[in-house]
Image (cartoon, rainbow, N blue to C red; front, side, top):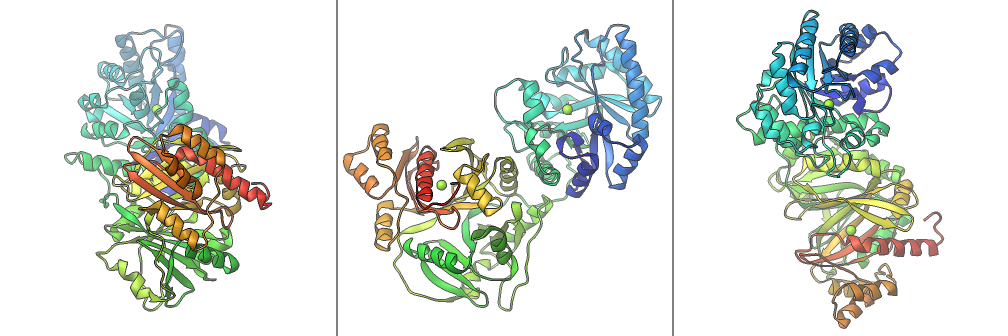
Length: 628
Ligand code: MG
Ligand code: MG
């Protein structure tokens, strides 16, 4: 499989783009004419620079407004084409993309267009070049790949073929299975892009909101399955126009692109077993059974305060590491590790972010396979030296420098708690917390797509629809990722301004990280009572909140009193009810959440988020914490 990406997809100047693309592992680029023109260097040198980076130019684009023109415009269009052919030969590429005409004077007629392409094919062939025709979704006469294919078929020229672009076909809801009828060797090039499922003008959607396959809502997988079934064996290329990517870091956008392309083709291979997909074998997405542990990097008084809070939450200090300054706190199936080491990865995480979640351990079916898949998708493995008697637990680097460890029972990795930790401390009955319900990660809005792609390509999880959370000082976007059985849930919260609680946390902690950890209880009132007994102080909610709750839901007065007394928030969906309360913020804005899901409640208490945020901000302002 030859992977490619259009230079327009990535920010930076041409050399920066090329470096990022080569580093991410792509085989080639579509050179977008604008990127070439903006560069100061002769075409031959540009071609050499590209090849020196180990890349080939898979396509030159775009050549616009060619077919169907009346004379003298027609002759001028052929002259323009000849000049582009000169340039292509200097650059060293043999394929040009001609997109369907939007010219106001272009005439319709399939045979007229076919005749134009036949002549263009003759001229290209005389120089050893080829021409690919693409239907733009907003083309004046041709806006459907079926019409473009009919023109290519009637042009009947070996040097004229079809270019397919998933955006143009899928955004117009054209059935991708119509592609299966096209002979694979008549398809010269395939471009892929996804897009969010929002209704807007297609040209505007295409120029600003395209995203990587798997980041949007289009059935790119069905499109690519149909393409693969034709026997097409040419480059598979990303052509993404996106305002966030244009301002993003070239390397992370290129890495995301590579990850999305490889994951997509792996999905295609599994869905179309009869089709040969030229891609190294890799394990399927890992199934995550839950969060095995959360590790905080912390020091001194902050670490003491965090441990004191864990104690009030009903955790038991149940072990110390055999060699390192790590303490293990447990309750139900929840494990929290406090790492006070002054060397190694956790220490650097602390130095960079202050008290922070530096490591997440996931319980998977096959830890080795999870790492192998991640490596195929471009993730870096993570390891640091292990001491005598310690286990080597497979791990990878996540995004923003984070670390994910994988624990499976089959390899005996689940024994790490007995092997590496000595039993310690006092026994306590706990407060009835059972497991980690969800982790909430905060990031800047423009990183959200990267994180959601990272998780959904590595693990069996689906994206819930994105929701807007209103902070008194701005908007936060929230996207939940969930495994089908709900055992593994992550919410991604994207802040657009530093004045929001999430944005402020982000600025304070220097980068994306876990901001809150939600712990599940089967009886939230009993948990709250036990925690109160242990000295836990919940986030106080306003009386107005409970007055509104009485208006919104048919709650018995006694129930309302119980909620109010324990500062518990309440929500319902079609499935059931949700009860939640929060700790007070600690260490720069992190907090714990306690939740009880009743019946099949599927959400996260989103309608309560604005009131929770306002309550947190009240508390932080009262403490005189600046800029909150
Ligand atoms: Mg295109
Ligand atoms: Mg939550």
